[in-house]
Amino acid sequence: MKLWIKHIAILAVIVVAGGVITVVSGIVPIAASSPHWPITKWFLEFSMERSVATHSIEIATPDLDDAALVIKGAGHFATGCVQCHGSPARGPSPIAESLMPQPPKLSDTVSEWKPRELFYIVKHGVKLTGMPGWPAQNRDDEVSAVVAFLKTLPNMPRAEYHDLVFGDVAAASDSVPSGLQHLVTNSCGRCHGVDGVGRDGVFPILAGQRKDYLASSLRAYSTGERHSGFMQPVAVPLKEQQIDALAEFYSELPSPLGDAIASEPDGVAAGNPNHDSDLTGQQIAQSGIPARRVPACVGCHAPSIAGNYPLLNGQPQDYLAQQLNLFKQRVRGGTKNAHLMHPATERITEQQEQAVAEFFAAE
Ligand code: HEC
Ligand code: HEC
Ligand code: HEC
Image (cartoon, rainbow, N blue to C red; front, side, top):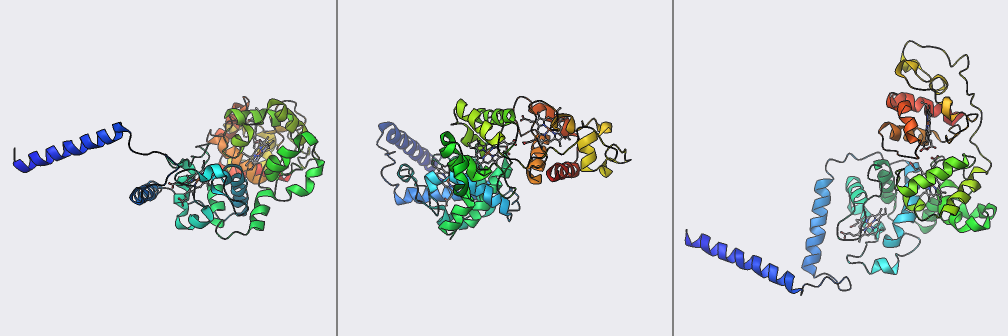
């Protein structure tokens, strides 16, 4: 063997042995109470930036200029991010400030990242730092909402942040039973409104929804059987009695969820066009698409039908269309009845989903 190869081999053995001895001896400090050496800090930050840049290359940037996405993302930021990162309204918790690395103040740092990189960080988190991944990995739509909000964060005035997160929640809080005051004003009401009507059509309406459906949906979120990074963290800490009380409270509020739709096909709806694409939302809702074995929606969703079926008429169109899409991709999950929706969504087109969502939203 050539002499230099031999020398390199000996050196390599010494380096490896030195590394093993250093680790086994336990002298490397892992204490979060003292900062990294500057070289270690630089190395970790550089590796993280490179990893995020490389892994996010394939991510197509979704359209983020949508006020509804920003409101949704802000709502969740107040649930799941402020503890560590602080917000325009308050600093982070002292516990989070004792993490190493410390969670950065995002209003100062987000503009350094491309939207696709933020998407990657929020969806997957960062190993060994405390930065968590998204609780519902199949809900990219929710991750996009958080990214849309993050993009608006630099220089956001405190009052604007407050409006985005809370809407007019404080104004209506007297109407809530005393046992639920705290929950409804600090949690549910921020997104669904204290009156249960949602905010600007962004969140599903809870007011007047069937009590059993509200309760079973909250239970499905809390067990993870219905997937949502927004709702799972909110539902998990709820006690059984709180779920029942919340379902009762919201189901009894005055509701825009109308009872206008007829449960039987009417003359106009029962037509039989030559092409599926000519079907109107009303026809699909009331007669289904027999040729493709898509059942009539009103067979389950009409207000006159008893059962644990949600009322749809009057819900925001975007919410209905989004839920149909989630069912179609088999990622919505839900209560033990959720599978009943699969035949209804497997064989309808996106255009038909929109049409039927528009029909129910307008009722
Ligand atoms: C338990 C604490 C914790 C929570 C909760 C948390 N983060 Fe983080 N986050 C961190 C830490 C720590 C880092 C720093 C990671 C690093 O330096 O590599 C970080 C980094 C980030 C970054 C990269 C910023 C930068 O400039 O390095 C973004 C963006 C981010 N978090 C967004 C969020 C969002 C959005 C949420 C809520 C959905 C959230 N984080 C929740 C701890 C947390
Ligand atoms: C951060 C905003 C936010 C908060 C806070 C919040 N929700 Fe939600 N909620 C949502 C979103 C977004 C959805 C739709 C999630 C999905 O796609 O499954 C939802 C869905 C629901 C649903 C299912 C509605 C349906 O028609 O299927 C119920 C029930 C519900 N929330 C109740 C509550 C209650 C009760 C609270 C308080 C304990 C609460 N939510 C707090 C945002 C929120
Ligand atoms: C066989 C009964 C049945 C039929 C037919 C049916 N659905 Fe459903 N649908 C359900 C059930 C049950 C749920 C609630 C799933 C859960 O509990 O998680 C649901 C949920 C939904 C939701 C989500 C509502 C919410 O608040 O989250 C939408 C939107 C929906 N259905 C639309 C439709 C449309 C449009 C059709 C017709 C193309 C249809 N459904 C046909 C049983 C049915």
